[in-house]
Length: 82
Image 1 (cartoon, one colour):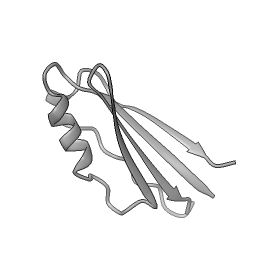
Image 2: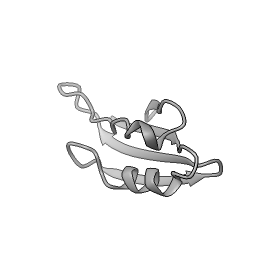
Image 3: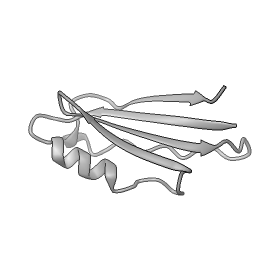
């Protein structure tokens, strides 16, 4: 089974490039099958990672960035391929 983890954050005023740089730097304890980084208007940064689900170990989540980079808490979603 393949699982996609989505991570989305809204940058604090004037910190869009800092948040994007932080998100692109990695932050995962192991490499996903695939990873894509996106931006959207309003200073939003989205990271989608794809994983082969191994239910004996939790999937690595991108952590929360430093508080000064974000305007609100991070949103996370988990999707399973059907």
